[in-house]
Image 1: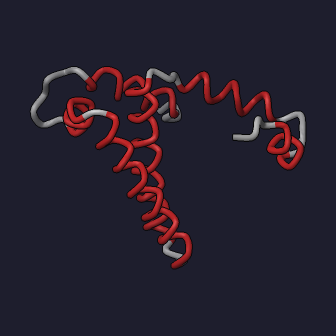
Image 2: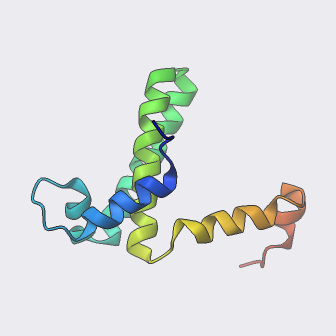
Length: 107
């Protein structure tokens, strides 16, 4: 079996987003819009952090999966393809994180 990738998940989300399937959480999130999806992303980020602090390995794995899913939903709703995020990450690999952060516009 081939490895499952973020790109695979992005494609599944894109397919389900406007499917109209009443049993699809993805379709429901897209119908509810960016505010609800961003709220869920924030909730999952907090739950992921809590699992990490507790040392709950399985919780961290599970919450991380939820976090990544909701992050990709927010990207999809915002019209930002995963490839744009990957390009940004790639552009940062040639310099230190401290230098990269210092080079960002203030504001």
